[in-house]
Image (cartoon, helix red, strand yellow):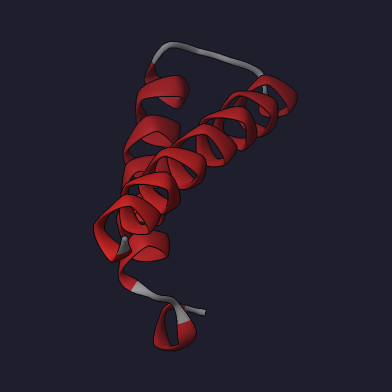
Length: 57
């Protein structure tokens, strides 16, 4: 998966891995650890892509 990911996706993935580790130490259930990072990933990718689009203009 990482071999085919772009820079933005790799940054997002690293953040998600870190947040998942944090959620585990906080004792969140597996379903919560799936839902929260999903929302976080969508938000981060939106922000990263919006920044890229502004730079291209």
